[in-house]
Image (cartoon, rainbow, N blue to C red):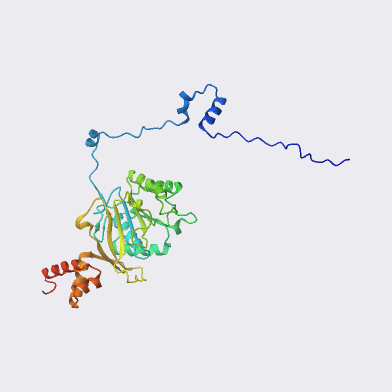
Length: 354
Protein backbone atom coordinates (compact mmCIF):
# COMPACT_ATOMS: atom_id res chain seq x y z
CA UNK A 1 0.00 0.00 0.00
CA UNK A 2 1.33 3.40 -0.91
CA UNK A 3 1.98 5.75 1.97
CA UNK A 4 -0.65 8.43 2.28
CA UNK A 5 0.69 11.96 2.33
CA UNK A 6 -0.90 15.06 3.78
CA UNK A 7 -1.88 17.51 1.12
CA UNK A 8 -0.79 20.75 2.73
CA UNK A 9 -2.32 22.71 -0.10
CA UNK A 10 -5.83 21.88 1.09
CA UNK A 11 -7.23 24.08 3.89
CA UNK A 12 -7.93 22.50 7.27
CA UNK A 13 -11.52 22.99 8.36
CA UNK A 14 -11.93 24.87 11.68
CA UNK A 15 -14.93 26.02 13.70
CA UNK A 16 -15.98 29.49 12.74
CA UNK A 17 -15.88 31.98 15.63
CA UNK A 18 -19.24 33.50 16.52
CA UNK A 19 -19.82 37.02 15.39
CA UNK A 20 -18.75 39.54 18.04
CA UNK A 21 -20.68 42.78 18.41
CA UNK A 22 -18.41 45.75 18.55
CA UNK A 23 -20.88 48.59 18.19
CA UNK A 24 -24.47 49.40 19.16
CA UNK A 25 -25.41 49.06 15.49
CA UNK A 26 -24.03 45.49 15.44
CA UNK A 27 -25.97 44.64 18.57
CA UNK A 28 -29.25 46.04 17.20
CA UNK A 29 -28.77 44.18 13.90
CA UNK A 30 -28.26 40.87 15.73
CA UNK A 31 -31.38 41.46 17.84
CA UNK A 32 -33.44 42.20 14.71
CA UNK A 33 -32.20 38.99 13.08
CA UNK A 34 -33.51 37.06 16.10
CA UNK A 35 -36.70 39.12 16.45
CA UNK A 36 -37.90 40.79 13.21
CA UNK A 37 -40.59 42.67 15.17
CA UNK A 38 -38.00 44.54 17.24
CA UNK A 39 -38.09 48.30 16.62
CA UNK A 40 -35.12 50.25 18.05
CA UNK A 41 -37.04 53.50 18.33
CA UNK A 42 -39.76 51.98 20.55
CA UNK A 43 -38.11 48.97 22.24
CA UNK A 44 -34.60 50.18 23.04
CA UNK A 45 -35.40 50.99 26.70
CA UNK A 46 -36.44 47.39 27.28
CA UNK A 47 -32.72 46.57 27.28
CA UNK A 48 -32.45 48.29 30.70
CA UNK A 49 -34.26 47.14 33.85
CA UNK A 50 -36.97 49.46 35.10
CA UNK A 51 -35.56 51.01 38.34
CA UNK A 52 -37.64 50.62 41.50
CA UNK A 53 -38.08 53.95 43.26
CA UNK A 54 -40.84 52.85 45.61
CA UNK A 55 -38.57 53.27 48.67
CA UNK A 56 -37.00 56.54 47.53
CA UNK A 57 -39.63 58.89 48.88
CA UNK A 58 -38.40 62.41 49.72
CA UNK A 59 -39.88 64.05 52.81
CA UNK A 60 -41.70 67.34 52.40
CA UNK A 61 -41.13 70.10 54.94
CA UNK A 62 -44.54 69.39 56.52
CA UNK A 63 -43.59 65.73 56.94
CA UNK A 64 -40.27 66.74 58.48
CA UNK A 65 -42.00 69.06 60.91
CA UNK A 66 -44.49 66.36 61.98
CA UNK A 67 -42.07 63.41 62.08
CA UNK A 68 -39.98 64.50 65.07
CA UNK A 69 -37.06 62.23 65.97
CA UNK A 70 -36.53 60.92 69.49
CA UNK A 71 -34.52 63.15 71.83
CA UNK A 72 -30.77 62.65 71.54
CA UNK A 73 -29.54 59.71 73.60
CA UNK A 74 -25.95 58.82 74.34
CA UNK A 75 -24.16 55.52 74.29
CA UNK A 76 -21.12 57.27 75.73
CA UNK A 77 -21.59 60.75 77.16
CA UNK A 78 -20.63 63.33 75.95
CA UNK A 79 -19.15 62.13 72.68
CA UNK A 80 -21.02 59.18 71.14
CA UNK A 81 -24.81 59.13 70.49
CA UNK A 82 -27.01 56.15 69.76
CA UNK A 83 -26.66 55.17 66.09
CA UNK A 84 -23.27 56.86 66.31
CA UNK A 85 -20.02 56.01 64.56
CA UNK A 86 -16.84 56.34 66.60
CA UNK A 87 -13.15 55.77 66.02
CA UNK A 88 -10.36 54.97 68.48
CA UNK A 89 -6.85 54.91 67.06
CA UNK A 90 -3.31 54.77 68.41
CA UNK A 91 0.14 53.40 67.75
CA UNK A 92 0.84 49.73 68.45
CA UNK A 93 1.34 49.03 72.15
CA UNK A 94 0.00 52.33 73.43
CA UNK A 95 -3.16 50.87 74.95
CA UNK A 96 -6.01 51.17 72.44
CA UNK A 97 -7.40 47.67 73.12
CA UNK A 98 -7.38 48.16 76.90
CA UNK A 99 -9.02 51.55 76.43
CA UNK A 100 -11.64 50.13 74.05
CA UNK A 101 -12.39 47.10 76.24
CA UNK A 102 -12.99 49.42 79.19
CA UNK A 103 -15.35 51.52 77.08
CA UNK A 104 -17.20 48.38 75.97
CA UNK A 105 -17.58 47.09 79.53
CA UNK A 106 -18.81 50.47 80.80
CA UNK A 107 -21.38 50.66 77.99
CA UNK A 108 -22.60 47.12 78.77
CA UNK A 109 -22.87 47.98 82.47
CA UNK A 110 -24.35 51.45 82.10
CA UNK A 111 -21.38 52.63 84.16
CA UNK A 112 -18.53 55.12 84.00
CA UNK A 113 -15.00 55.08 82.64
CA UNK A 114 -12.59 57.99 83.04
CA UNK A 115 -14.67 61.11 82.26
CA UNK A 116 -17.22 59.15 80.21
CA UNK A 117 -20.62 58.04 81.48
CA UNK A 118 -23.05 55.55 79.97
CA UNK A 119 -26.67 56.55 80.73
CA UNK A 120 -28.08 53.00 80.44
CA UNK A 121 -26.83 49.43 79.99
CA UNK A 122 -26.69 48.31 76.36
CA UNK A 123 -25.91 45.08 74.56
CA UNK A 124 -22.35 45.18 73.25
CA UNK A 125 -20.59 42.85 70.81
CA UNK A 126 -16.80 43.19 70.97
CA UNK A 127 -15.13 41.66 67.89
CA UNK A 128 -11.45 40.94 68.50
CA UNK A 129 -9.37 40.11 65.45
CA UNK A 130 -6.00 39.08 66.83
CA UNK A 131 -5.62 38.48 70.56
CA UNK A 132 -5.12 35.05 72.14
CA UNK A 133 -8.10 34.08 74.29
CA UNK A 134 -5.96 33.75 77.44
CA UNK A 135 -4.79 37.38 77.13
CA UNK A 136 -8.25 38.69 76.30
CA UNK A 137 -9.78 36.78 79.22
CA UNK A 138 -7.17 38.15 81.64
CA UNK A 139 -7.83 41.73 80.58
CA UNK A 140 -11.60 41.44 80.79
CA UNK A 141 -11.48 39.84 84.25
CA UNK A 142 -9.18 42.65 85.43
CA UNK A 143 -11.66 45.22 84.08
CA UNK A 144 -14.57 43.47 85.80
CA UNK A 145 -12.71 43.46 89.13
CA UNK A 146 -12.27 47.25 88.92
CA UNK A 147 -15.55 48.34 87.29
CA UNK A 148 -17.70 45.81 89.16
CA UNK A 149 -19.99 42.97 88.13
CA UNK A 150 -22.50 43.35 85.33
CA UNK A 151 -26.17 43.44 86.28
CA UNK A 152 -26.96 41.91 82.89
CA UNK A 153 -24.14 39.53 81.97
CA UNK A 154 -25.58 38.90 78.50
CA UNK A 155 -24.91 42.55 77.66
CA UNK A 156 -21.18 41.93 77.14
CA UNK A 157 -20.38 39.55 74.26
CA UNK A 158 -17.00 38.78 72.70
CA UNK A 159 -16.16 37.22 69.34
CA UNK A 160 -12.54 36.08 69.33
CA UNK A 161 -10.49 33.88 66.93
CA UNK A 162 -9.61 31.07 69.37
CA UNK A 163 -13.26 30.40 70.18
CA UNK A 164 -14.59 30.24 66.60
CA UNK A 165 -11.79 28.00 65.25
CA UNK A 166 -11.73 26.33 62.71
CA UNK A 167 -13.84 29.18 61.36
CA UNK A 168 -12.31 32.64 61.10
CA UNK A 169 -13.64 35.83 62.56
CA UNK A 170 -15.43 37.37 59.52
CA UNK A 171 -13.92 40.32 57.68
CA UNK A 172 -15.97 43.48 57.38
CA UNK A 173 -14.87 44.21 53.80
CA UNK A 174 -16.55 41.15 52.27
CA UNK A 175 -20.23 40.65 51.48
CA UNK A 176 -20.24 37.31 53.30
CA UNK A 177 -18.62 38.82 56.41
CA UNK A 178 -21.02 41.75 56.46
CA UNK A 179 -24.00 39.40 56.10
CA UNK A 180 -22.76 37.26 59.00
CA UNK A 181 -22.39 40.30 61.27
CA UNK A 182 -25.86 41.55 60.39
CA UNK A 183 -27.31 38.15 61.32
CA UNK A 184 -25.36 38.12 64.63
CA UNK A 185 -26.51 41.64 65.46
CA UNK A 186 -30.13 40.73 64.74
CA UNK A 187 -29.98 37.42 66.63
CA UNK A 188 -28.58 38.94 69.84
CA UNK A 189 -30.32 42.34 69.58
CA UNK A 190 -26.93 44.05 69.64
CA UNK A 191 -26.97 47.80 70.17
CA UNK A 192 -23.23 48.53 70.01
CA UNK A 193 -20.58 46.66 68.01
CA UNK A 194 -16.84 47.32 68.37
CA UNK A 195 -14.39 46.08 65.71
CA UNK A 196 -10.84 45.71 67.06
CA UNK A 197 -9.02 46.30 64.83
CA UNK A 198 -9.59 47.42 61.25
CA UNK A 199 -6.39 45.98 59.78
CA UNK A 200 -7.00 42.52 61.27
CA UNK A 201 -10.68 42.43 60.31
CA UNK A 202 -10.25 43.47 56.67
CA UNK A 203 -7.84 43.10 53.77
CA UNK A 204 -8.59 46.19 51.69
CA UNK A 205 -5.97 48.79 50.72
CA UNK A 206 -6.38 51.43 53.43
CA UNK A 207 -5.02 54.16 51.18
CA UNK A 208 -7.59 53.66 48.42
CA UNK A 209 -10.81 55.54 49.10
CA UNK A 210 -12.75 53.46 46.55
CA UNK A 211 -11.94 50.29 48.54
CA UNK A 212 -13.02 51.95 51.80
CA UNK A 213 -16.36 53.06 50.32
CA UNK A 214 -18.14 49.63 50.51
CA UNK A 215 -17.21 49.35 54.21
CA UNK A 216 -18.43 52.88 54.88
CA UNK A 217 -21.73 52.14 53.10
CA UNK A 218 -22.18 49.04 55.27
CA UNK A 219 -21.44 50.97 58.49
CA UNK A 220 -24.06 53.54 57.45
CA UNK A 221 -26.46 50.64 56.83
CA UNK A 222 -25.84 49.42 60.40
CA UNK A 223 -26.52 52.95 61.64
CA UNK A 224 -29.85 52.96 59.76
CA UNK A 225 -30.74 49.77 61.68
CA UNK A 226 -30.11 51.57 64.99
CA UNK A 227 -26.65 50.12 65.69
CA UNK A 228 -23.76 52.14 67.12
CA UNK A 229 -20.37 51.22 65.63
CA UNK A 230 -16.87 51.80 67.05
CA UNK A 231 -13.83 51.09 64.87
CA UNK A 232 -10.43 50.53 66.52
CA UNK A 233 -7.52 51.35 64.22
CA UNK A 234 -3.78 51.98 64.07
CA UNK A 235 -2.15 55.36 63.72
CA UNK A 236 0.61 55.91 61.18
CA UNK A 237 4.11 57.29 61.59
CA UNK A 238 2.77 60.85 61.51
CA UNK A 239 0.58 60.12 64.55
CA UNK A 240 -2.63 60.51 62.55
CA UNK A 241 -4.78 57.48 61.68
CA UNK A 242 -3.51 55.21 58.94
CA UNK A 243 -5.27 55.29 55.58
CA UNK A 244 -7.44 57.43 53.31
CA UNK A 245 -8.77 60.75 54.59
CA UNK A 246 -12.31 59.60 53.76
CA UNK A 247 -12.37 57.12 56.66
CA UNK A 248 -13.68 59.72 59.11
CA UNK A 249 -16.25 61.27 56.76
CA UNK A 250 -19.21 59.72 58.57
CA UNK A 251 -17.71 59.59 62.08
CA UNK A 252 -19.36 61.33 65.02
CA UNK A 253 -16.20 61.23 67.12
CA UNK A 254 -12.58 60.28 66.49
CA UNK A 255 -10.48 59.62 69.61
CA UNK A 256 -6.71 59.57 69.22
CA UNK A 257 -4.49 58.07 71.92
CA UNK A 258 -1.07 59.73 71.75
CA UNK A 259 2.18 59.31 73.70
CA UNK A 260 2.67 61.76 76.54
CA UNK A 261 6.39 61.85 75.86
CA UNK A 262 7.66 60.65 72.48
CA UNK A 263 11.13 60.08 73.91
CA UNK A 264 9.87 57.83 76.70
CA UNK A 265 9.56 54.13 75.95
CA UNK A 266 6.27 52.50 76.88
CA UNK A 267 6.31 50.09 79.80
CA UNK A 268 6.54 46.41 78.89
CA UNK A 269 3.86 45.70 81.49
CA UNK A 270 0.52 45.56 79.61
CA UNK A 271 -1.29 46.93 82.68
CA UNK A 272 0.86 50.05 83.02
CA UNK A 273 0.11 52.69 80.39
CA UNK A 274 0.23 56.45 80.01
CA UNK A 275 -1.11 58.46 77.10
CA UNK A 276 -3.14 61.50 76.21
CA UNK A 277 -6.62 61.43 74.74
CA UNK A 278 -7.30 63.99 72.03
CA UNK A 279 -10.38 64.43 69.86
CA UNK A 280 -9.73 64.70 66.13
CA UNK A 281 -13.41 64.98 65.25
CA UNK A 282 -16.30 66.15 67.43
CA UNK A 283 -19.71 66.27 65.79
CA UNK A 284 -22.09 66.62 68.75
CA UNK A 285 -19.96 68.11 71.54
CA UNK A 286 -17.33 70.75 72.12
CA UNK A 287 -15.99 73.30 74.59
CA UNK A 288 -14.60 71.89 77.83
CA UNK A 289 -15.94 68.45 76.99
CA UNK A 290 -13.59 68.28 74.00
CA UNK A 291 -10.41 69.26 75.86
CA UNK A 292 -7.63 66.64 75.79
CA UNK A 293 -6.89 64.41 78.78
CA UNK A 294 -3.81 62.77 80.21
CA UNK A 295 -4.64 59.18 81.13
CA UNK A 296 -2.70 56.74 83.31
CA UNK A 297 -3.25 53.04 83.92
CA UNK A 298 -1.49 51.31 86.80
CA UNK A 299 -2.32 47.62 87.35
CA UNK A 300 -5.93 47.95 86.31
CA UNK A 301 -6.68 51.30 87.93
CA UNK A 302 -7.22 54.29 85.67
CA UNK A 303 -6.80 57.97 86.44
CA UNK A 304 -7.09 61.09 84.32
CA UNK A 305 -6.71 64.83 84.43
CA UNK A 306 -6.99 67.59 81.89
CA UNK A 307 -3.92 68.34 79.80
CA UNK A 308 -4.14 71.93 81.04
CA UNK A 309 -3.78 70.68 84.63
CA UNK A 310 -0.91 68.44 83.55
CA UNK A 311 0.87 71.36 81.88
CA UNK A 312 0.25 73.54 84.93
CA UNK A 313 1.84 70.92 87.19
CA UNK A 314 4.81 70.69 84.84
CA UNK A 315 5.34 74.47 84.80
CA UNK A 316 5.14 74.63 88.62
CA UNK A 317 7.76 71.87 88.83
CA UNK A 318 10.09 73.58 86.34
CA UNK A 319 9.61 76.95 88.08
CA UNK A 320 10.72 75.36 91.35
CA UNK A 321 13.97 74.40 89.62
CA UNK A 322 14.59 78.05 88.83
CA UNK A 323 14.40 77.73 85.06
CA UNK A 324 13.70 80.71 82.82
CA UNK A 325 10.55 80.77 80.70
CA UNK A 326 12.62 80.02 77.62
CA UNK A 327 14.18 76.95 79.26
CA UNK A 328 10.77 75.84 80.53
CA UNK A 329 9.40 75.99 76.98
CA UNK A 330 12.35 73.97 75.70
CA UNK A 331 12.10 71.25 78.36
CA UNK A 332 8.31 70.94 78.39
CA UNK A 333 7.52 71.30 74.68
CA UNK A 334 5.02 74.04 75.61
CA UNK A 335 5.11 77.40 73.81
CA UNK A 336 6.70 80.29 75.67
CA UNK A 337 3.49 82.35 75.48
CA UNK A 338 1.55 79.50 77.12
CA UNK A 339 4.26 79.15 79.78
CA UNK A 340 3.66 82.79 80.62
CA UNK A 341 -0.12 82.26 80.92
CA UNK A 342 0.31 79.16 83.08
CA UNK A 343 2.70 80.97 85.42
CA UNK A 344 0.14 83.77 85.87
CA UNK A 345 -2.54 81.21 86.64
CA UNK A 346 -0.32 79.39 89.13
CA UNK A 347 0.39 82.70 90.90
CA UNK A 348 -3.32 83.58 90.97
CA UNK A 349 -4.05 80.21 92.55
CA UNK A 350 -1.19 80.82 95.01
CA UNK A 351 0.55 77.66 93.83
CA UNK A 352 3.80 79.57 93.38
CA UNK A 353 5.08 82.77 94.91
CA UNK A 354 5.53 85.99 92.97
